[in-house]
Image (tube, rainbow, N blue to C red; front, side, top):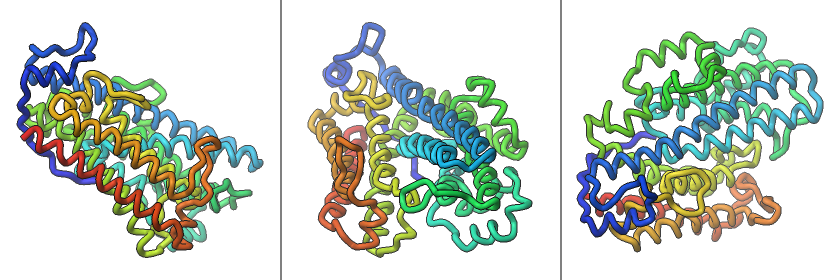
Length: 394
């Protein structure tokens, strides 16, 4: 997703800093720290405890997809197909939990990893053409060069799932396509991690996979502005021209963007048009969990960590609380409200983790309109709340 980075000028009093960082540990910030130190501390927590660990988990989960597919190649037992589907699902969850920070290396102005692995609707006719006429000669490298609507998460999903369940079997052409498309997906997931963390900071296994495709390596090396992006964001260097404020502005901007996308593009648009093909992740019937995980990615970004129940001291939430405690409280409440209302679309059972309805069925049958409207409204409110952060810091 594309967004304009705002050159925010922050001002904050010592008393406000005291509120924002009252819970800091001994080596954390104090009210006497400069604003540069405040920004650096927040960015460091955000990058090191949220962004990079998410992309590391995504890359590692992607490699498990390859292991599962190799087992599937040896024999299409029900257990092998289910294991491949489970590996896809695990990687998918980590990807959806990264969508609050789809800027920098993954954005369309850089490597466009988001566009390459998460485009939908699928080009079904093109996919059928590959299966009918091209699968025999398909390689992982040639698959990586295909149009985004013919590869990525949703093509691999299509090959593995039907009606919310792993398929009974795959044809030889489907299996070949799955293995090649999965390798292409793996390379993109690994590229995201390497670009953020830096090649020197990933495991030998990840580095070896990154180096499998010379085209990807050349693509990466031709874009130095997006290499070791974690360091660039934490220091406000590179495209940020030394502005820590501009770097910090990426956090609420990313949160606002995905909140708006979930409500408007992922939920409202297919529901209003009744176009089931526009429902994301509808072959696996994982749509509502995808959307909830997008909001969880917002919570992770705002709280400065993964799957936290409360914000860290050096987080954007703590910063906002120091400026406007009511806004911070409203944002935190609206995050939870959005997750709850998204899940309510499918009549989610928190005890079993199951839904009565998939979003595909909701769109197909035009049901649950009250719950859909409530979820769309909650996401719009969340987007607007993150937009208010700029009013605090102008």
